[in-house]
Image (cartoon, rainbow, N blue to C red; front, top):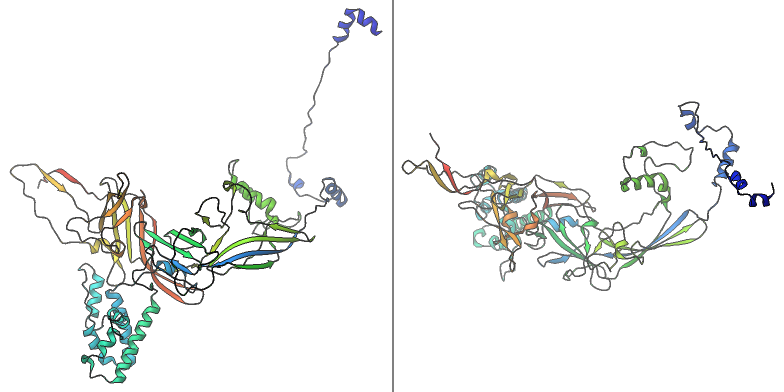
Length: 589
């Protein structure tokens, strides 16, 4: 039909567009012949040429301009730390011939019955070996075991009964052997030995006795590791932890590290922070210079491998030691997803470069240059050297710089720490716990030092044989007024007191119950009154502080024995049953 006719006749136009249009969709669905997919998962090869064409079709033969790493050079700046500073102002030179834990934790050996008998027996052994056993009575008279033993310390009483009159006090003998009086050129022991009471001794006997005393002192100094100065300690009672600082020699590039929260018995890189404001006085005997030394090493990169790692070749048999399919995670389990992604996709893209580092070294990696098989060199800068803002920076094994976020820390400290040490039974154990009913903190001495050399139960040593007078009611009264109850003597109270100049902040001060023995152990008595503990150091779970002998062997084969402490979480709140102003019923008999 001509177009002109359609345009002039509207009826023809309506008839043209009323023809319906129907659209149909068909969905293709797979119709498997079987529900068993075992044969399909076998990846059987029927035509190798077909497999090659499929690999070509998916682009597996396309080359990339990315070569494998064949060599790597690492440039690092090394600084040796040469001195240690304690909170009380003491500073001394340090070398890694002794473990750092020993230097920080060790404390001076206090006089006591056990240590006196131990040193006295060693001195008696040397005297008998020199055929001078008949002269030991003079030393027992000059250095008697004059120790006052608590009547509840059964081991101490037995040791005193077995040793009194037979062994001299070796600790006093050692003290006189190494101590000089004012203006004297000879020790107290030599002055006594050359005195009128020993005029009958021959010069040869006196020489042998002096040699035995000197050998005893040398043995004691070798057996027990103690600080060079008495009272030099890194333990801070208000924080119930160790605090100390390390510093490199003064000069260009001097570095200072601080560890003010060490209490778990093991030091590592995460125990230290960089703090240039910490003051560590200079001392004599420091080794090295303040300027860091450059260290350039070259290695062949080694691919990172782990058990169960997927093989890059499809036909290589897996070890099946790690089942990635059993990882239970969700869309929010980012850590699990990252672990699976690393193990399945990127595990063969990581390389390991062993970088040798001496102990007691503060190291900063300046750069890494990687060379691939094409001869191209790739410069890898430290993770914290980029222009990003501070909140975007992330790095592992880097020390925190306390000077502020604008200072980039790229340092790692390989501390001369012990991999493992032997710990004896606790000599002392104090549990700090909160008593909300009494509104105070108690320091319970569960274990206290015994004069027998070991720890004794605190409740047994604190036991008293005191009985209150029988209560006689006045008239026919049925009740009585109780002023207050009491607690065992090994419960030491710490009451809240205001900080100086503050009306809201408080700290805990050691107190004493009426007619109580008071604290016995060294943890609560090493500081004279007033003894304070920061209030935040005792949480609701409480804390426990233990003190015990530690023994370890160092890299050079030397053995160290010292007394150290560590802190751990407590077992919750406690109740002392301390009550005041009570009205109680009179017991009916």
